[in-house]
Image (cartoon, rainbow, N blue to C red; front, side, top):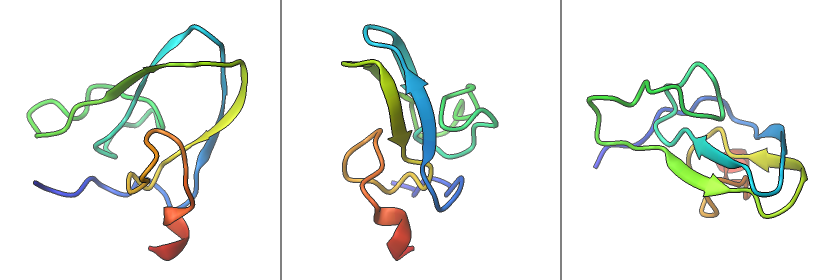
Length: 79
């Protein structure tokens, strides 16, 4: 399995709304980081679909190496 592209070495803060569904980019190629724009098509990657459990600012992973997808766990600081 290939490794995803590192979109950036810092998380992206986004305002999520409880109950809303989102598609997090897992390949790193989306121009709409941290969300999927379909750039993965033809690759082995697929977006992670998730529903926000609470409303508020959350930091989503942009290095695509987190162990807590789609949320940042600080892994970017080791890259």
